[in-house]
Length: 84
Image 1 (cartoon, rainbow, N blue to C red):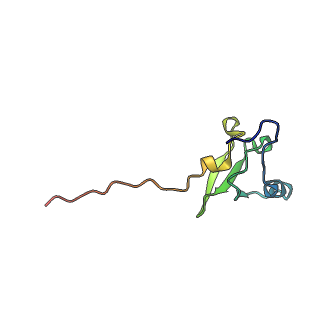
Image 2 (cartoon, helix red, strand yellow):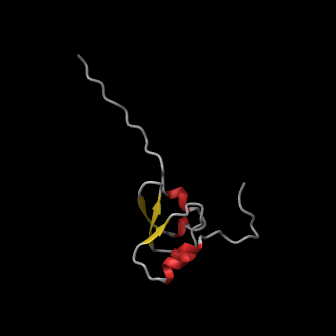
Image 3 (tube, rainbow, N blue to C red):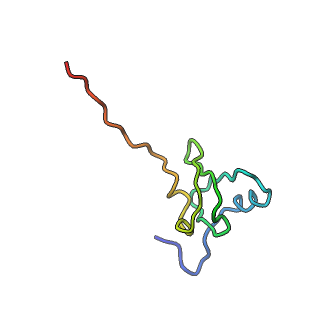
């Protein structure tokens, strides 16, 4: 179920604090937070459970969740079999 239209977008308070401290590297661990407008044209690092993935925020990504752009699973590669 989606969030109600009359509610504002959910954004973690930690994101605001990192911008106020003028950190060069904005690290986001809250994947359920929505992408706000004040991060437009900035590069953020999203935690996917193991590492931080780099993401440039564009106008097309505003309003979506951070977790949609930081994949947590790796696609399996097909194994090559040797012929005898």
